[in-house]
Length: 152
Image (cartoon, rainbow, N blue to C red; front, side):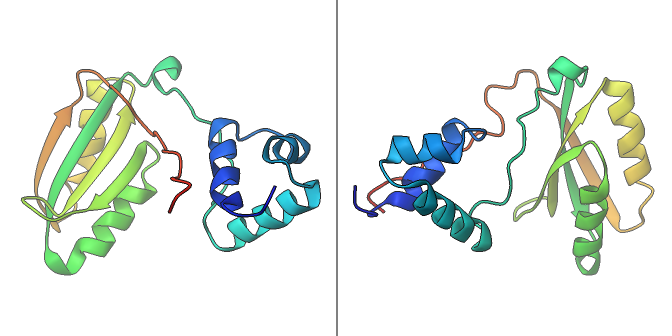
């Protein structure tokens, strides 16, 4: 096999099974283990692959409530509020956004009381001017990654 499109093929193979061995990757991609190892190291150093983590089903662990928290923030404090949200254990995503709200965060909570307690604690921050929280009714897809196009 040529090395054309090897990196996206390697990423796609890892998306399919992030725990597979270098030997299995080499066999699947028809290259040597050394080639896979070198390309994988390069992808890690370039920041393309940031780590290897399990995909956790929070519902199965009792975190049944997914909350979407939208905040209006004093402009000079956007970074500080984003960092505060990022530091919260149950907040799994934080986005600085355009539109009606400055920050959108997604959190996993055991129940609405748990969510309410954490949101009230956040709202003690004087730089948060307004909040809007939605509770998801049904998670259709979450934390999905997509395969890379081999023609790019």
